Amino acid sequence: MELDGEQYYNEQAMINKNNPLFPVFKLLAQEERIHANILERYSVQAEYDLTESEAYSRFKNVFANMDEFSVEIKSSPEQIDAYRLALEKERASIELYEKMQNDAKSDQDKTLFAFLVEQEKIHYRIFDDIIQHLIKAEQWVEDAEFGVREEY
Image (cartoon, rainbow, N blue to C red):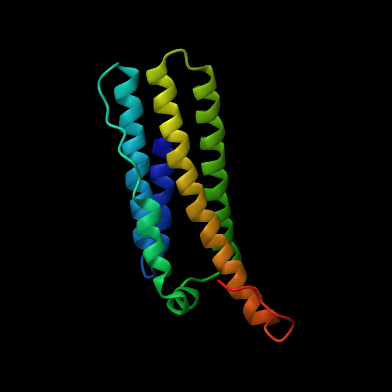
């Protein structure tokens, strides 16, 4: 599953190679590879390191200049669907790792799966934020003259 995520994010990176999402997708692909390596080491009972993700803090830098983001990122149905698919993949990962955490027998196993749940929640939040920014930008353009809009 983690390797599938890595492949998917690398594909999305290539689709977004000319906009600010390229480094986000590359970072997420790298993180999925790290998760796969952790699970591979876990499966052969080798030591592994649970290093916290920097994805969300690095991702927030993409949105430092919101005007540039909304202009450069296309909100075509295909791309929003791709972000929603990524969101769904992250949700499925969260559910799987939560189940594995609940079924785990040892504290070490519980710690591993709790770590992976938190990492996947970070990835989920990234895609949720991307989708929300695109939807808000589209709504703002379409409905700017109607009513007061929330700050973002």
